Amino acid sequence: MEQVTLTIKKQKSIALIAHDGKKKELIDWCGEHRDILAQHRLCGTGTTARMITDQIGLSVRGYNSGPLGGDQQIGARVVEGKVDIIIFFSDPLEAQPHDPDVKALLRIAQVYDIPMANNKSTADFLISSPLMNEEYNHEVLNFKANIEERARTLKE
Image (cartoon, rainbow, N blue to C red; front, side, top):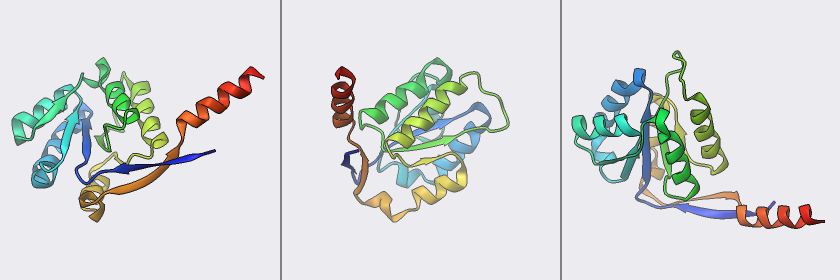
């Protein structure tokens, strides 16, 4: 299958998401890394985005709350090339009613080779990486060519 090179620019678009039981941890983490995060474009799901903006003073574009489609909105932004990194403090000890949406977001991040942190230590490694300050090229499946090939072979 054909690959295409995508570039994550120096100024990243970072999605910030947290389950209810992890919101305080993410907000605290954003406070610790406020200066770095302020250099990038931030977005997040409803309540999390609002709380980070109100408590930390970072400008975070809010989408819907996760259970109301916010995870899917962020996933769509990944597909559009508008989200470069996902910081998602998920709660592994609490059942989530929108778990299929969360799994879909995780899957689309993998498909598009998007760096994603699911906990504080991974987020710390990502935010402190020298790659946060440079462009980064990564290879993903050439989806257009893949669709054309599938359409051609299904006609036969």
